[in-house]
Each structure stands twice: as C-alpha cells, then as structure tokens.
Amino acid sequence: MRRAAHRGRFTSLPLHHTIGMRQSALKSGCLPVNGEDRQMLVLGYQGTLQPDPTLCQAAGPGYDHASGGIAVPGGWPPQMEALIEPLLARALLGLERRTPAVQRVFGGELIPLDALLELLRERLRGILAQAIAAHLETADHHTLLVERDLICEFPVLLPLLQQAVSEWIAAMAAFHDRLQRDGQRLAAWLGVATLPPLESVSGTTSDTHPGGHVVLRIVFSGGCCVYYKPRPISGEWLWHRLLEAVAEAEPALRLPAVRVLEGSSPARYGWTESVLPLDRLRGSPDGTRYWHAAGAMLCLAHHVSLTDLHLGNVIATPSGPAVIDAECLGTPRFVDTPASGNSRGNTAFGAFFESLIGAGLLPRKLLSRMPDVSGLFGSAAPVSGLGLPQWFVASDGSYSLATAPAVLLDHGNAPGRTSALTAMPQLLAGYRQAAGVLLHIRKALLASGSHWRSVLEREHAPRVVLRDTLTYGILLSQSLEPGNLRSEYRRQAAFRGALQRDAPVAFPKALVRKELQALRHLHVPRFMALPGTRTLASGCGGSLASNFSVCTPAEEVLRRMEELSLEKLEAVYIPALLLAILNLAESSR
Image (cartoon, rainbow, N blue to C red):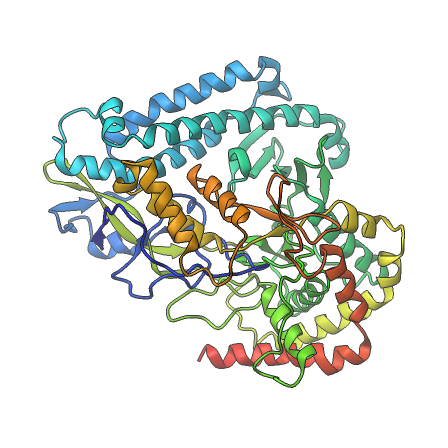
C-alpha cells in the first residue's frame, strides 16, 4: 500500500460517456490498471466495496506499515471520532425538533435510528478523512484536535459538514412523515390489519438522491421487509406489470416481480416489497429453471429498453433473477446506433447486439484485471486501480492514512459461479419463450388507452446516466483532498476542468452547470428524460436541454416492441445473443 497523496488538483482521468448504461460506484474501466497507482475513494463505497481483507490477515498482527505502524482494520483516529460525535448529537437534536414526537413512534415503539445515524457517521468520516490525515502529519498526536483549528486550516470543510447534517435531518424527517402518512395503506397492501413496530431501518448501496435522501430497508417485527425509495417508482411499476402480464399469459413463465406501492405524493417517493428474505428461505435455485428465467429477463429487458442492470440491481431468487431497480426502464436513444463491428453490413443486427450488451445483464469484454459487474454473472473480485481509506497506528500512537486495495463485495445477484457459455442453452430457450409470450400480450399492453401505455407515455421519466457513477465518485473524493479544502475557488475550478476535459461529446452548458452544482454539494448528479419529450432534465425535473435524445422514452419502448416478430427473432435476436455469449467465452480465456 502507499500513503494517500494530498494534492490541490484533480488527477486527469477519462470521463466515459455511458448514456443509458449506469456502471455504479466501482463499475467502470476508467481507472489505471496499475495496482501501485490506486485512486482513493472516500465516499459512497460502503456495502459495495471493502478493503482487501487478506491484506492484514496474510501479514499477521505484527505487520509493519512503512511509517512504523501496524494495521488497524476498521479503526478510526480518536481525533476524528471526537469531532464527529457532536455533529451526530446536533443531527439527532435537529430531527427531534423538526419531527413531532408522535411521528417518531410506529406500532407503539420508537423508530430505531442507530443505523440511520451510522449513515451520517460514514458520510462525515469520508468528508473528514483526508483533511485529518494531512493535519495529523504535522500536529502533535497527543494534542486534542479542536474543530475550529481544523476549519481554520481547511475552510471549505465547515459548509460541507453543516450541509451533511442538515440534509440528514431533512431526509429523515421526510421519511418519518411519509411512513406515518402511508402506514394504513402499507398495511392494506401487505395484507395485514395493522403493521407491527419497526425492528430495523438501514441504508442500502444505492446512490444518494437530491437533498441527501437515500433508499432505506425497513424490517418490521416478524420479518416483513419493504424498501422506501425517495423517488418516483413508475419504472418498477411498469416492470412489475409487464411480468404479471407475462405470467397471466404463460403461468410457467412467472419471473420474480417486486410489488410496488406509490407514495401519497407519487412524484416524490414510493415503496417496494422485498423479494427477500422469504424467497431465499424456500430453497436454492434450480440451475436449469434459473437460467431459463434469466434468458426471459434478457428478452423483456431489451424490449422495454431497461438498462442499468448491473450486479447491484439484480437479486438471485429460487424462481429466477429479480430486478430491484428499474428506474432506467425506457432509456431513449441519444444517437442512432451504428452496426456492430461483428456485422458491419447488418445495421439491425449490430444495433440489437449493442442494446443487448447495453442492458448490463451480460458481461462486457473486460479490461485487464477489472471485475465483471454484470447483473447475471458479476461476482466478488479485486478492483484494480481503486483503493479505500485504511488507517494505521504507529507504536507511538500516531495515526496515518493509506490507500488499501479495494475488493468488490458479493451482491447476491447470481446463484453461483456459472459462465454464460455453460448457461447458453437455457438462456436461448428462455429468450425464445419470452419473445413468444410478448408477441401474444403486446397488443393489449400497447393498446391506446391502456393503463400500462398511459403510465409509460405520460408519467414515467427514466433516469439518464451521462457519466458512470465511478467517475463522479472519484471527482468527489479528489475534491476532498487537502489542497481543494483550503479554497472553494480552487475546488470549483478543479471540478470544472475535470468535467470539461476529455469529455467525448460536447454537453450543453446548462447540463455541465448542473453537474458542477451537484458535485459541489457532494451529490452524484442525476438526470432524467421527461415523459413524452426528448428533453433532458435534472433530477428535480428542471429542463436542461431540449431535443437531447432521438426519441421519447415511450417511443423507444414502442419501437422495440413493435419490431418484434418470429422472423426477426430467429434472423437477428437469437444469432446476436449467441454471438454475444461466444464473444464473452472467447474474451474470458
């Protein structure tokens, strides 16, 4: 490992244009493959990445750090924790002042806040880590670190810390209010007279939403589990209704579908029912059945233009893979897709090949030593070029920060280590069957005035990802390096230069300004395509660029579904799927 470098500028790195294909927080090849040149990620990795656990285990308890220290797995400098505790106390007091006492009780018991406070603690640690490391390099480690001294040395820190606390208060207050408001509706939806108290409330690995809101996992006493999503859930509703229509037409093809309940304010939030843990308690997946269902999912995802299906958005269940995040359903085209290099004379074949890989379910050709993060085959593995903060304590009690190798965690997205080539017969059979059922139900789904089509055309605004989340995560981490925390002007200039440098397309100025605004506040920028338009908008719905896409979200879905035919299935879709699998088998050798 090497010590974390403290620079006042951003490292030059390519910003990949991955429209319609989100590669979340680790999931991109834009990092150096040289393990000795790791970029430290200090925010947003919890639950997705962890420091390589073999690092200290292999070295043993007496392993010496370069500065004469020994590794402290999970340890944090007491100076950092002493600064964080008052901030947590302020957050808790702020929530109590903002939320009436009656809203902090559910089912006769207090709503547990421990895990929610841990979310804030981890965020504050990420903001402070590099500044405290730089301060401790020159300070007397026996001297108590005073907040005003740190703020004096790094003036940009104070507004970032204050904002993190105020956003947590606002987000948690909104959650308490929405839970109380929808309590009876949730009970009826779950089929019970009254909901029991909450056993736990915890965060997930999803990106932070505007205003600091996060997806929460809620477990009620007795084991019932739902997810609170602080965004519209029209994508999940469309996907669930599609799978229900498929199962009604062909009961043998019942894919696991996550039920959804719109919130009292549908444009702002909703609830989804977990496919776990109940499904997992029923047994292990049957290999043949599982991969048949996976082939059906490939077909359906392509024909509704559902992208972003990386390993964090798919869960393995005994009845097949389940999609747990469908906000990118209906991703429109932003450029006319050329023919694939594998079939230069066949534009239809090439376009389908690209869109098939673009869904994220199948592995891409991997860069050297980069992990597979596909929804169906991705698994735990080292992540080359990316590091996580690891604190070391020396024999004299002083702490220093180093960059530890990062390891991608198992996301439970696959039943075991199986290659696409091994599962090919089942994938092809499942794809064929789903295509046949889709042809049968297409007329009813797309009929003028049908509820499904109405939601698709008038309500659903799919998320659009212009740069992979890892790129944003790296920029956020670099913005928290000591040099950038000493000057907000320098920090903004570094952001602006990084966003403009090496961009593969010329983004509208309004879009870049919105990116800059989000990054300044330590948010991952979020964009969406407005329903019924070709307009790109911010995550809050503000228009940024008209005619940004080739078509509307609904037009893309309708085009794909109407192009489906038995002739095209055998002439284009099945050969392209076969080619994708064979290419992957060749590249993995």
